[in-house]
Structure formats: structure tokens, C-alpha cells
Amino acid sequence: MSEAQNIQWFPGHMAKTRREISASLALVDAAVEIADARIPISSRNPELEDILAGKPHMILLNKSDMADAGVTATWIAHFERAGLRAFAVDCRSGKGLGRWKAEVHALLADRLEQYRAKGMVGKPLRVMVVGIPNVGKSSFINRMCGGARAKVEDRPGVTRGKQWFRIDNTLELLDTPGVLWPKFEDAAVGEHLAFTGAVTDRVIDTELLAVRLLEVLSAHYMERLTARYGVQPDAPYELLCAIARRRGMVVRGGEADTERAANMLLSEYRDGKLGGITLERP
Ligand code: G4P
Image 1 (spheres, rainbow, N blue to C red):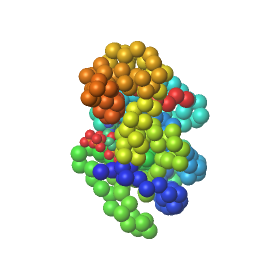
Image 2: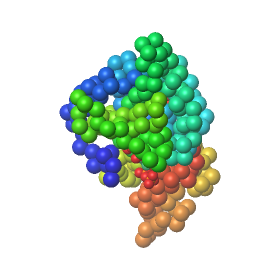
Image 3: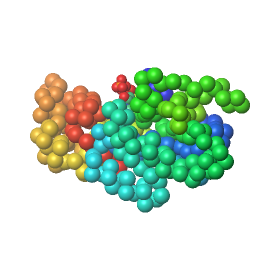
């Protein structure tokens, strides 16, 4: 079970992470933020930019295999306009990661030049991997470091338990120090994280969650709902009832079994049965 499931939110958590990340910033040259391409707003910690305090930074829109490619391109343009290098990746298959190393070298060209000028040739670049739980940080690290996942020794003066990983002689990764929480105090963020399965359904009522998902889906992806469930545009709750009936999910008396339909819809959405879908737009 990941940290994202069973969350007990309280602000002290974020203060601790802020301190832990800040304390480690001096050890790295850059940060790579991993976000979920399906929910690029809700899967980011709004304080991160501030915490990174000007450290060179790029963003990977992960799980792009499950997102809407057209909308992902819009997001990339949006981040690039804001001065943040952005890439669509799939850390499960490795798609999009082939040029990542070269991009880090490009991002840190000035730093490499400084090292060269000081005769520090061969000093590896160090990059902190940051992102909320379940976004794909371990998958990214595993992909970049290969099966071996060579763990670099803890460095002197560094809190014990810090996770360093060596990609090769030129590049090392530091896993997020602490847990970077999403912005749970925002109800819409909690909902969007629940749609994607990043937090457990137990946090929110399943039927309510399915109805809210249908609200988003019917606004942007009605044709997919029609194609998969044979339903026509309607209000979200009516859509859920129609989906239940189309799937033969009825209880005694012929009433739609909306709870069963809700569970099915959420799991089919999460399994990608409705195709690549992005729930948030710039
Ligand atoms: P974390 O370290 O940030 O907490 O995330 P982690 O890498 O553990 O990834 C969380 C889940 O997301 C894993 O699924 C992982 O396989 C999946 N995942 C990561 N990157 C991608 C991606 O680009 N595309 C897709 N489709 N999935 C991705 P899991 O169900 O927890 O485990 P498993 O299915 O790998 O066994």
C-alpha cells in the first residue's frame, strides 16, 4: 500500500517535507518534478516552486500513455511558456525517457561549464526527483537506473536514509526527501486524485465520485461514453443510471444498481478502457 492511501492530512506534514527538501537542495544541481499527465494541476504540490528556490527544474508529465495526447501537448506548451521544460513520458514502458539525460545536460550547461572551468571534470550532476506519492517516482528511478538500481552510499552530513541512485558516471538521482503531499485542502484536488486512483475511494463515497467523474467526462469525452456504454448525453446521475441499465446492473424492482455501476465505471476508467483521458486543462 502506498503512502497516498490512508492519508491523514495535517499541515505539519508539509512543513516537515519543506524542511527536508530545503536541507537537501544544496546537494543537488537540479530537480526533476514528476506529475501525472491526466491531472497536471492536482498532482503537483503548489508550494514546490517556492521550496525549490530557483534551482533549475523540469517537469515530466508521466503516465502519458493514459492521458489525452492532444491535451498533453497543450500542457507542455503551457509549461514551456512559463519557462519550465516539460516532457511527456511513460515511466512504465520508458517511452519519452530516451532523451532525458541529454535534456539534463542541456538544462545544466552553465553548471557543467563552471565545473569544466574549475577543472572539476567528471563530477557527476545530481538531480532531486520530486513528486507526490504514486505519481511514478520509483518507476522513473528504476527506468533510469536499470535493473541494478545501484544505490549510492549515504553522504557525510546528510540525514541517514537518503536515497541516492547512480545512473552512470555523469548523473546521480536523489529520491524525494520526505513526502511531498498534494493540496488536499482543495476538495477538487482530492476528487481528481481519487478518480485516478492515487488516493483510496474510501476517502470519498464511490457513487458520488462516479457522478463527479461523469460530470467531467460528459463535458469533454461524451463520445467515449456513448461508444463504450451506449448512453446519450444526460445529467451525470442519470448517466450513471443509464450505464447501470445498459450493463444489466439492476436490483430487485428493476432499479439501477448505481453502486455497482460506479465501481465498474471507476475501475474501467482507471484501467484505460475509455482510452487516453485528461481531466484537467491549462
Ligand atoms: P511513486 O514512487 O511516486 O509512489 O510511484 P510508483 O513508481 O510506485 O508508481 C505508482 C503506480 O503507477 C505503479 O502502479 C506504477 O506501475 C504506475 N506507473 C508509473 N508510471 C507509469 C506510467 O507512465 N504509466 C502507467 N500506466 N503507469 C505508471 P501500481 O499499480 O502501484 O504497481 P504495478 O502496476 O506497477 O504493479
